[in-house]
Structures are given as structure tokens and as C-alpha cells.
Image 1 (cartoon, helix red, strand yellow):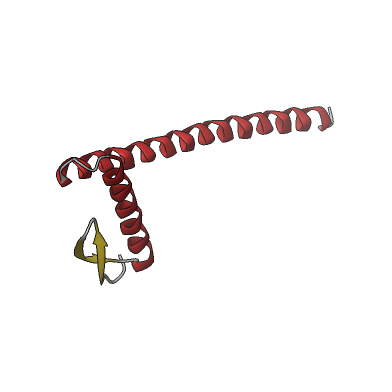
Image 2: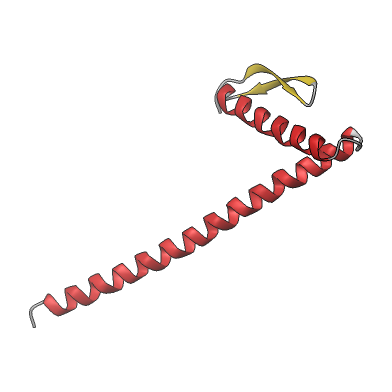
Length: 99
């Protein structure tokens, strides 16, 4: 693990001090969380902050699940293609090998 550095971020009108290894990534994540929370507040202006935070967390979790599923599908397709290529190479080697 690398050395942790302090980073101050503002999320949903509140400032937080974080200890992070990568300030750039942490700042980007904080900005993303803040954006989702602000968008949720705009959609549900009458809701209390804790409700907005939970709905925002569910939206972020949904995005994560969508990306994980895309990765799984891509990984399965890539594995299948590699298997097909190996079969073709094996067939090609078998056909071209001297008897």
C-alpha cells in the first residue's frame, strides 16, 4: 500500500477529510457521489437528507451492478472467442502436421 494523504472533499453541502492513497481518484469519486446526491435532491426536493442519501446510494449501487454485468458478459464472450480460436489453431495444426 502507498502512503495515504489527506484530502478534503465536499459532498452534499458538508466537508469531509479523507485519508486516501490516490487523491485524483478520491476527488473524482467524491464529485460523482455529490453529483448523484444533488440530482436526487433535485428530483425529490421535499425528502429529508437521509432519504436522499439512501436513494443516491441505491442509484450508485445500481450503476455498479450494471457495469459488473457488462464486465461479466464481456468476459464470457472473450473466453468463448479465445476457446474458438484455440480450436481453430488446433485444427489448423492438425491439418498441416505431416503424417
